[in-house]
Image (cartoon, rainbow, N blue to C red):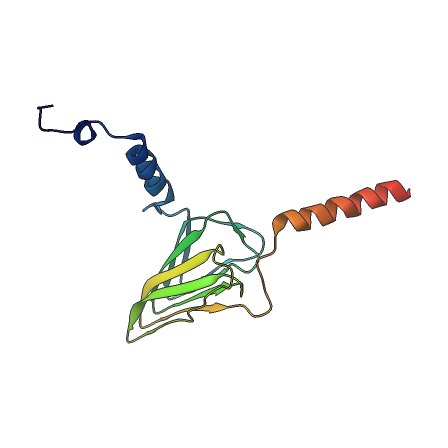
Length: 167
């Protein structure tokens, strides 16, 4: 360090280190947490499951359905990368989740209904992809809301306790 340099130029401060850690923690990884592939077939992800940060969906002469209406959202951001070639990819989300989409179609259809959740802390699902002579669509599933898992568990525990106490 020469006399004209500040110590902040050479030694990172705790603020810089904390800011870097926060940014890198929230980055969405390049590798998918889950792959859903349909080649001359169909593949479905629905029911109670944990949605990762990144999901890749590939439909080649097939059909992929990703239903997040009962999924557990462990992360604020979920990215679904969809590729459809002569196929169909359908993404369904609960009504109280934000939904975004970017992509396009080449002699195909890419259609994502943008949805803004009332709660600013609600999960955000991004659907990105391309449809070549195929279809990609993302829509809310009407009547479905992200349920608080703790409330459901508490109700089941209470119900189980009542059964044992009534015996």
